[in-house]
Image 1 (tube, one colour):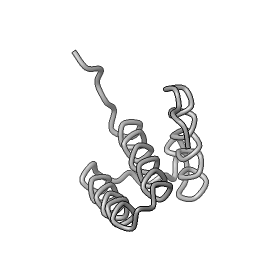
Image 2 (image 1 turned 120 degrees about the vertical axis):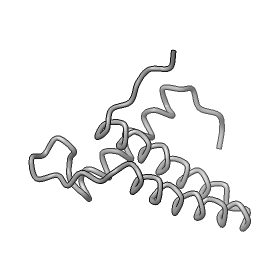
Image 3 (image 1 turned 135 degrees about the horizontal axis):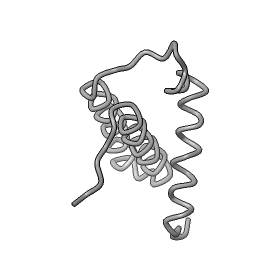
Amino acid sequence: MGKNNREKVYEAINSERDYQDSKWGDVSNENYVEYPPSQYLIDIEIHLNKAKLANYNIDKNGVMDEIRKIAALCVKCGEVHSVNNRK
């Protein structure tokens, strides 16, 4: 597995966001249930623990799968609750 440029990384994160929307609903849908940021932190922590376990088992692909999921959860939280540019 080689290095990716930023565009490829964002492409992977977008593919994960598409998967999340297909599984749990699109945030633009009027029936979408809005969770508080704290719920996203819990979900991120769950995937972080899975990444740590994969790392312990020397499973780099498993680690990177979880990193992609974490990044997509961060994006989704920002979509739902807004996020500001760094100053």
